[in-house]
Image (cartoon, rainbow, N blue to C red):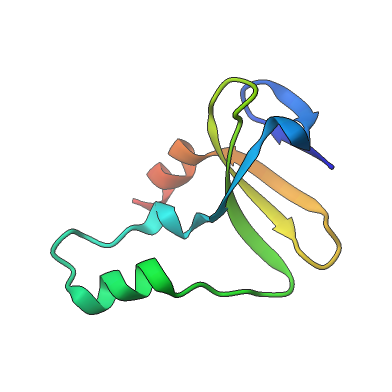
Amino acid sequence: MRLTCPVCGERDLREFYYMGDAVALARPDPEAGEAAWDDYVHNRDNPAGVTRDLWLHEAGCAAWIVVTRNTVSHEVLETALAADVKRAMS
């Protein structure tokens, strides 16, 4: 599998480190309360279909990227810098 780093271009998957669901970009406010933080830390969806994952370009430019992919077909639909995705969420 190959991923396209927005900084470096298309690269082999072995250059990247998978960090999990991109839910980390939607961290609750520090004062959100115990229930919100419990949900954020412990609960994750496991969908069959389109997901957004957080990857680190560990053996490249060290950029954090969000990869939108289909877990059924293994198709990579989009990649974007995590900072840009986070900014768009605000």
